[in-house]
Image (cartoon, rainbow, N blue to C red; front, side):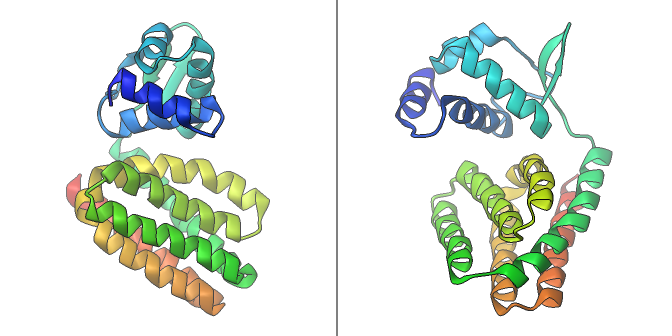
Amino acid sequence: MTATNASNTLGSSHLPLREVVAAEMRRMILGGELLPGERLIEDRLAERLDVSRNPIREAMRVLSTEGFLEVTARRGAFVASMSAQEAENLFDVRLALEPLSARLASVQITKVGIKRLEEIQSRAKKAYAKTDLDALADLNTEFHTCVFELSENTYLAGIGAPMVKRSQWLFRHSASDRAPQSWAEHQGLIHAIASGDGDLSETEARRHVLAARASYRQRA
């Protein structure tokens, strides 16, 4: 995305500017426009995205909490990297949290909640048809965040949200191969949650994370 196109996108969004800038920077990191270890200069990013330094600074704080940036007082902000061990640690946490969120969601589920999940699923199919990998990664994050929210457990959702954002890094790099199977697994999870079966929902969520981990290991 050019600076001009980014500017048009940022300026036309209804979201707070810091969130839009964070989303654009996250996309640039996931898409390889900002490389692991690269130092980020506020002035240059502000010029590139045609915004002031303040939303850049705020976006950096957001991305730092999500693990996309490493920020230190003296050295500045750098694009983070993810080692193989860090990825394995992330999958361990996902295996602990996502089955629990699915179980709780199945207990609390409503027709409105299922509709939210199915709408995300529908948008993902369209994104895949267009080979829009950035959109697929965003929708994968939105799907899992939604399951955490549907659990109606604010503590769990608060822990799960940044974890899901961090997991987007792994999904984006396997989306071209993994997306069809991933979204088939999502469909199974939707059906399980809609049925109100906590055991089945937990099983489907665990199966999904294990499949994602297996796919990662094959590519590593």
